[in-house]
Image 1 (spheres, helix red, strand yellow):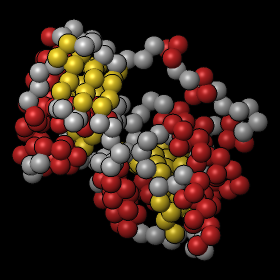
Image 2 (image 1 turned 90 degrees about the horizontal axis):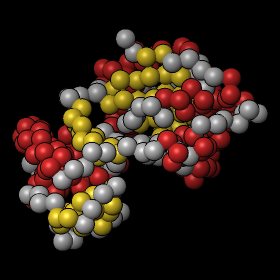
Image 3 (image 1 turned 135 degrees about the horizontal axis):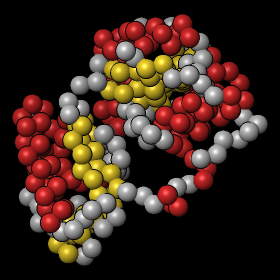
Length: 255
């Protein structure tokens, strides 16, 4: 299993080093050299983590961090040579999930990112009741309904669907499913596939066409919902023409 990681790094040599070394530790990194290029990818892909080299981005790094934060729920780690406490606290207050002091080995960086990702899939503030399109789930009563009609689920099916619904549009990894089902990862991987298949059948039987429960082979699962084009926030489509990052960027996928 590989985690998808977006790297905002204007320095080509640094980007190439991360692209070359991070796959060794379970990551598939994609590098861009500007904020608009990152925004374009974040609207199309669901990344597990984002790295922002604040020193290389320069004076507009805070603006870049704010933009990324508005478009992604994944952890965003800031890379910086600054080791003073005030600067690092400033980045955390600006929205960074963590601040990683440079220089840092790829092994340590990968370990920090993995911990952020694993911590992010089980937040403590999951709602007791949530609604996703026609689907409503009540965690206290362990009940689910579609357009007000009961959706009959086993205990494991409810827990799995609830985890996916609280992370709508995100890849949920097998480790998170294992914790939700309270079973070892390898065992839950097999049983979760069966549960997902049966949940999908039940949703289809109730005529739910715009909720999609997809299996991301080797990684996990994703629950998504079709959203009308008119509902898309215009802010996601337009970049400030005066933004110095409006010059675009280059995607450098790992081979």
